Amino acid sequence: MTAASRLDVRTFVVDVPDFPKKGIVFKDITPLLADAKAFAATIDQMAAPFKELGIGVVAGIESRGFLLATPIAYSLGAGVVPIRKKGKLPRKTHTASYDLEYGQDSIEAHVDAFPRGTKVLLVDDVLATGGTAKAACELLGKLGGEVVGLSFLIELAFLRGRDKLPGQQIRSLITY
Ligand code: AMP
Image (cartoon, rainbow, N blue to C red):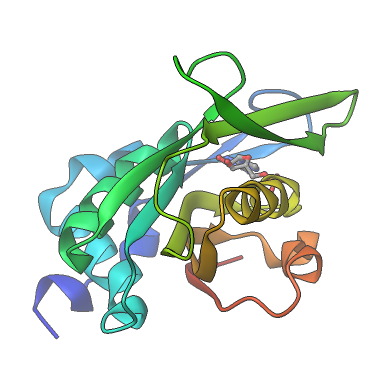
């Protein structure tokens, strides 16, 4: 374990009450990303449980997921695949939908993002209700990927997102 990975990264996450709307406590990770030691510790610790598992690609969920998925992929010697909000990718995509408080939203990835059977690690900043991660797993399944794990910086355990992801290997660095 490096000195950086012993740092308590929790102290770099800032709670922002009532953002983006009343009643939500937004977990702002920008101070963590901007601190060189905290950022390095975060990437080391999010990647560590998934070394030696033959991960071929790390899939990051738009947009804060990209900031974590990319260095984790580099650390694991894997490629990186963006899972984007609908309408952003230029070529043929597969889509998966998930429920919002009002209505639905969709995420997409290119149909040929990786070869079928590729081992995939899914990465995002926050696991809240689990709807986004569940849709991302469905999407990766449509692409023929084998999701071998999910790595989150933050888990809001009281929202029970894990319940939507049975049988998955889920790791979170910080749990509230
Ligand atoms: P969910 O689908 O409910 O698990 O929500 C996960 C997605 O919403 C992630 O991509 C997060 O970036 C974002 N998110 C949900 N809750 C929060 C929060 N309290 N603070 C920051 N981001 C959040």
